[in-house]
Image (cartoon, rainbow, N blue to C red; front, side, top):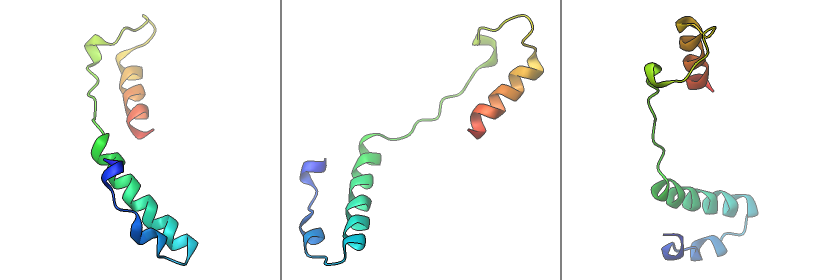
Length: 68
């Protein structure tokens, strides 16, 4: 947790840019440990679609979402 992280070494750094980078590294390490990313699979047969939305358009839409 963030409250258990030791930030004392950041206060000893004189360069503000290096101090910020160190802080950000520690903060993001705790953040990604607390909120890991999960990849969701899209199953095409469960997507509600309109009649004009063909399977080719569905494939392109899934690829676009994955790239975004």
